[in-house]
Image 1 (tube, rainbow, N blue to C red):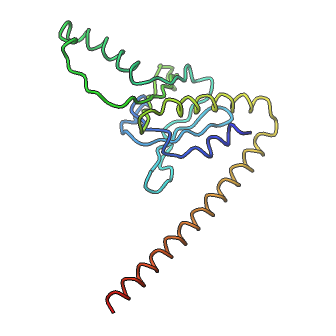
Image 2: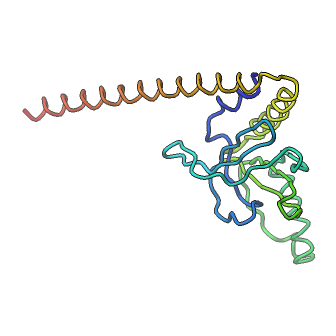
Length: 194
């Protein structure tokens, strides 16, 4: 059951930013990946409110052809070959910008009309290759666990409820802390001006 729990505990900002590959979804947005017993869901995620805003896609395991993690160098090498074909020998002189290495999740799948698509999700911070590798590993381990455990649904509900209660408790503590800070600052300001 620890594989599902990994996704509950992973900070929502760790999933990255959707770049391309979902039909009719043109906007780059922060995303959350949710494993399901039969596949996965990808949601847009508002980092201000920490809430899902929209389900971008739901994929069944049998629709997923490949789930890979790649680093920036691999992606750039692919672009370099395309650049070489596009501009010929001048590609060697084309200046490349230097940036921190980013990681990418690539999910190749068959859409509803059997066209091959590739969803590209870019890490929201540099050096996230290991985090993305952990997402892939725990996703596949979760699916394996689902196939071997007949009570998984009940266990998932208990974990989710416990996790949600913990989050609500932490939010209440945070709100109380903010209120205390506000009151202290107000008292200090009042005492200074009186």
